[in-house]
Image (cartoon, rainbow, N blue to C red; front, top):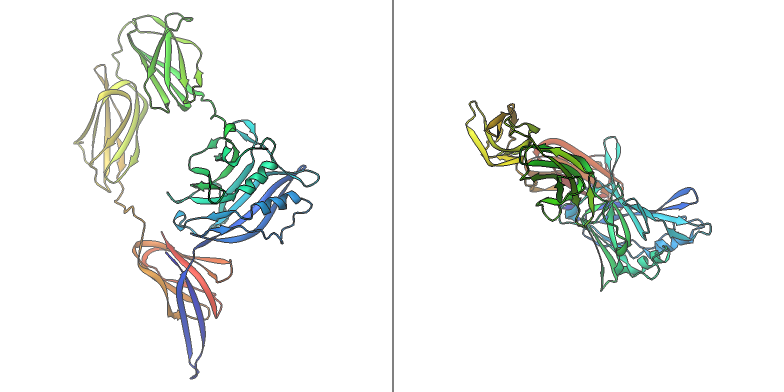
Length: 509
């Protein structure tokens, strides 16, 4: 909800009787922010904290240049860097986070000091290659947990509510001057991107551009993680795909299915022929523009009892290809009249109040019939009349909070395979909308004493409630939880100081 402040006072009136008063007004939500520099000097790693500050949500915050309390030692390059970033602005919308019990940590890393205290920026490993960068920003959050601090190295903001950082172009120029290979590079020729724990670049959810009027490098972030800056021309291609399973061949008299799996999305091509050195016949399976992880190519028009040689090829969106060694198979002399088998047994993969999803794989293309219901005999039917190997099934018209039974029948070559009976229970209907206040939290003047105050409100359903409060003008916060799942939102705050103004906000889940 919106923030409020409590002003509590108690004293004696002219008649000697005690009296009290309280005032409630809107205040700004905020989180704490810690900024530090991480630099290497010889074999030592130095972490230099800058004074923490409170970031008010929905407000532009300028870092400022007051470093009077920071000991830079004999490293003038670090103080110069801090001054260059002094006009940097941060903005975090209140809609981006639901939990204010957070501390945002921002670390400028990969800094290196020489014996004279001059600054440079170390390279970093990207896709297995040591790559020049001019910027390494590590951002993570910490919060109070029941057993101490909880660190979240990746923190995702609510959808559509990104954090915005505006860095003066002069600060970027300062970094260029301290980074080998960036002399003469223009800010518009660089890009910022996420760096994953595996050393891969991830450009999804991050935007960076130069805004003309403010002359800033603007970064819009959908989540907090490690961010690196590098020349656009130095952004490497993703790692080349590898074949992680297969190839496997399922053969018949006049056709064969060749299957394999890759760890990245690629297309599916098989080249084959009757001699090992002349694989002249390519077969391709259509896929979307990004390709697929699971590959299956059917070769048709083959001759019975004949040996064929083949090689698989998987090409990524950048035109790079990974291939297998040449292998062979021999077609069958007689047709396969055995029933199909499950390469992957039927599984219920998701259950909602009104539908359930199932997945399984057969060893050859098969038609499917599914019988299901809440009582036996099973009266509901699902039919998949187009032969397939991979089967993604949706069972509809379910009733919430009901136990169901499912049996799968797979048919190929006139033979039918029956699965074991699967069971699942559909969940109860749940209101997906967030909870809401039907009566906003308030503090009544009669509920304030020298050391206590009672906050009360009402929710539209049973919820858990928490209040975070702190004395106005301080950053020491206290969080009080009430996890009894009630619509009544009454919490007593204790151990308050007399004649002291307190800020607070309430949130419900």
